[in-house]
Length: 195
Image (tube, rainbow, N blue to C red; front, side):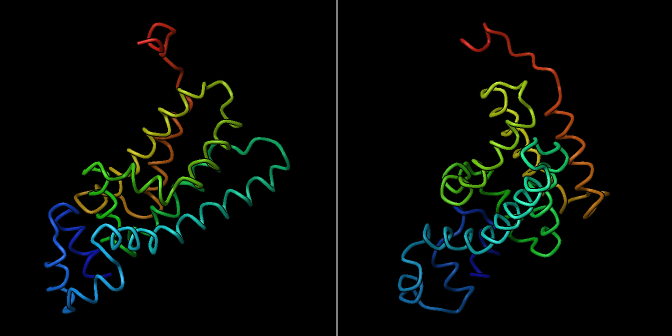
């Protein structure tokens, strides 16, 4: 798994073959097929192993915030922190996984991974954002959530380049940026909706 994670992060999913993973991990093809079946299933299990705990932490934070709100909408900053903090603080601990997720995003594989590993998180957070931002239509909220995920993916990749901020400082700037976008007035008109 570590070899696959490192190679997928360095070369991308499409640029990494099972043979390269086998050579790096010093195992045989039969072992890979026995444990994982295919390169796609190996990636799937790798994402689940790393994203599962992040998703559990996100949901636990949101559960706590909703309990504290006692039926009222959760403040936007709290929802953003619950969604963004778990992955952003882990990029220091697991840089290969952050790079891998950014690569998957860039290679267009995130819709498939999101459907498999992030759908329940997406549903819970969409509902929370919807209650907190009732002035946004379903379409507007969906677009802004895409912007948020894109900003997070880009920030995760940027954190390993020449980013002057790290850890909590980087998270605060990302949250401020996303909050501004979530609260911005909408330019979507009825004509734009039809097009």
